[in-house]
Length: 116
Image 1: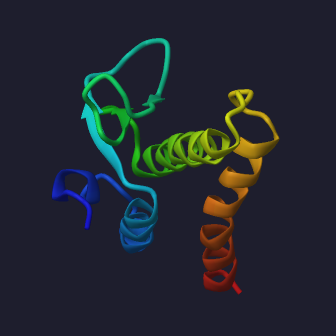
Image 2: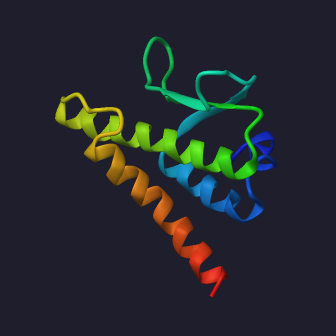
């Protein structure tokens, strides 16, 4: 389940999908005041935080917020994947690219079906 403050910022058609993604990849998601240098970020668990933390700028439109959220969840998923192999990943390397494609793929498929 996703927080209503996040759900109301997402495209309505994507809210259930995002809830499922966050169920599979548990993350603390915070919407924060706008930062000039980034749209969002990911912090892995540690230093007293049991879960991944994702922050998203509060000035993003629904589609930019969705894309940024999935981008950051891909970082969390890639981090979990590399953790089991005890190796460092490049921020947007092959593992991140695989995770991002897996997260965006179902949405792209749904959008394609809706416009046929």
